[in-house]
Length: 254
Image (cartoon, rainbow, N blue to C red):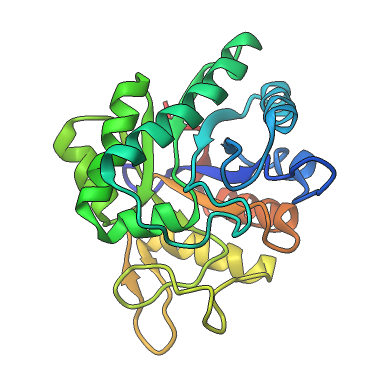
């Protein structure tokens, strides 16, 4: 993003599985500009994947893949010891499944955002980040979403593939720029007003607030709202309203 005047607003969605419902996808998609669709390994199933793609298409929301470690029981939030070569094939499988569903419905896949522990692990592990980048390269002309300032962004830059530095509306930061562990108090920001304030700070001021400090410098291209955060749709609405009120154009990445 240039000049802090434009940002993409994305959400993680399509995370229901069979009769088990997760999130309020229909409402959150009214406020975001990109969606990361679960591909079946941490959540989601074929019917949910297609329904989410179609819901995004109706609203003009850009569609990306949200692949994970194979961890349905842990919702993809448990770290796993997986060899880099296996990570590549796991991601190709998931991206390929969603890409076929999307293409068959006249939708072009635009990006890939790893989910949960895979995303967080790759932020600090260059070999894992390189494996993810390799999968994205092999999958086609897709953009990689990764934590701002992390190994995911450095690996994408080194490989010469499109990337987007990501910040978070509904997660607290630590002073190292990493997301606060969900095992710690205050890790999730469930108050829409607080999430909106943090989002404006990140985009307009270039800093994420951190308890007891001046905050951490961040420059982002896209902001995320987690679909499983309580009142995710309310958060997305408050964030978009606040950003636009601050003169920021909220739009999908070109």
